[in-house]
Image (cartoon, rainbow, N blue to C red):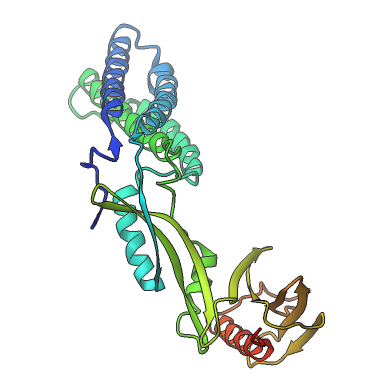
Length: 324
């Protein structure tokens, strides 16, 4: 069983994308040729040639790059679904293969900042090329040099704009080709691997079709060894100037408990704060570090301390649990 690639026509159709890509190449050549002719006929239009038109081309490239992404068509069909439990190491190997096959299909909204920076770079590059003659930098001949610089500038603008325009949006079938679960929540959760009393990993839903597979869904899970799966632990991360991880332990129909708060010294930088409560038939124990509201430095929760907190919570849940 393999992962889908660019050559799999049964799952993804690239025919419409090819038309847009060829059209963009033609448009870029036409605009660059027009700039060369304009530079020959109206040498005084330097700002338009080296600044104005590249900015316009950059915007056009962004639009056509996005259009190229949206022109990738997903071929509808039924996926055979199956769920599997994998370790974090196995999941990361799956994600690597997944991104090699699908990375070009899902959205990268973080590239918006890169788009803005690229626009500034293009304007600066245009001004640099514009002032090269005043610095007496001549390669061959002023006219030939202008053709070279226009060609280079417009090629850079077109490629950069098209790439960013392609990466930012998503294709229509985002439910099949979305970015896998990663981030700081995953990083802290993966630190639970090997912690005493905890079995942590990923519940992954795999879709199989036409001899290839994809990740349909993935969920971080942590259970207590020796206890039923009705006893679970979840990793949460809040952000208020720094990454603040904490744990939520739940026991479904496994006893009852009075609402309370307790602070414990467990050999970590900050004491552990546990909050106990009941929600219908579910015991909820939230474990976090009791960080002072006023500190002289930005708090930092180490991986070792987080693992100690998880081990302590696992012990508490084991003590609380009562078989139904």
